[in-house]
Image 1 (cartoon, one colour):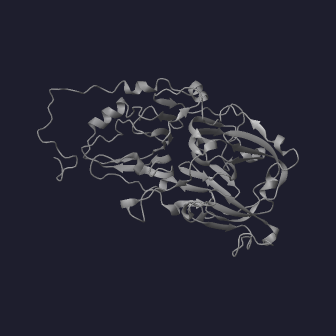
Image 2 (cartoon, rainbow, N blue to C red):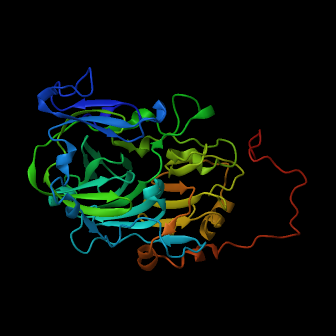
Image 3 (cartoon, rainbow, N blue to C red):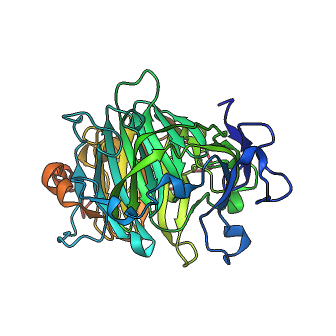
Length: 458
């Protein structure tokens, strides 16, 4: 962490691997330091409001035109790759209005890196229209660097959540070591690698492709100004680190929902200095300052939002990234597990560590669940029984757990592979044990008690 940059999420960072490599007085001098090439990476349209500008200036050994095919046969060198499990929407097969759960993927049968080991569970929208997102899992036992492979995602941002095994995420901007319970965000257009961190023999986890607007951290409103939820200063950016390498490399590009492979002669990690606010970042989710009730009931899950990608409609997200971290739950006179609900937003759930309180015995780390628009869901029979009998005069500490949710305005459409190979068709049976409790003769008290009375109950 000492080698990373502490700044502000969405703010500007500056870094140089050689002193003076980063011009201070202009962006594109006629004679750049060290004979480097200035290059702009613009992530937003030139005329968007300044508050939404996203860009970075690189000062690199070779311009990016030399990090992709640039000869007379360049068009034919982009080989279309029909990846068997990494796919993009829109899909044509039917999606019923049912509850879905998908098992964790198996370890790779043969050597696989991050790209090879990607499995798309579900997706929505259309990457060509810059709308929607895709929910993926990965299992890998080989680093992309071992194969001389680089990835350039031109459709969206990549949000990586390691579940097992630390990662080394190498980018044009520099490197990030990302461990379980941390997240990495690589902005669209950036060339990067996902490698096994030193000492790791395998890794697995989840990642999202965000085809919509950039992620931002939520407004705090009455929470205040200096604390609560994810603090912008806890998002760390890499420091410049360059290599000058020549060899037989491969660039994998994701463009308009399709994958392409093309040869590379030079390493694209040749940036000696850079500045901007389009930089990749990592965030330790253990630093999330959870907000909760201290009286009765509990807030909607949006109170645990780390980041959001918004649409043009105020408050309507293309995707909210929500976590359920360790926290105290002190609410009195309250059914503490999540209530039964049907939402207009659609939910993709994953579990990085421990157990999830609404499905304590059946939802395992690495698994996924989907509850789409207005599809009913909630706690299973075991959670209902435990939550109904709990002594709520005593606070609980939820520990050893980290679940997350990607909540979207568009329904999640499971892939054919996920439905055929990972689908837990018996999942809806978990609600079969929810008891019928209705008794028309059990009249409630004449005066309904307060959930949190002013005086301690005896």
